Amino acid sequence: MSILSYLHVVVTTRLAELRRDGERGDSPVPTAVIIAGLVGVAIAVTALALTKANNWMTNIPNYTETK
Image (cartoon, rainbow, N blue to C red; front, side):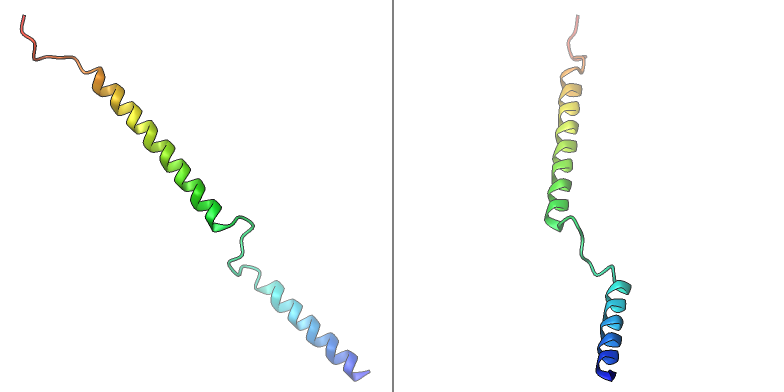
């Protein structure tokens, strides 16, 4: 009976250690997916800024003309 008690204590202790160290760097979302999402957002923001800048530059009045 002492071997069963020993095994019970070992297994219980190991499970408690695993539960305590729950944050081991494992994530439900892989790092590559997070990076791909960030790159997608960066491309969208850059495209929006480029579009706004191009529209702003084309709508500047030409003050160099003389009447």
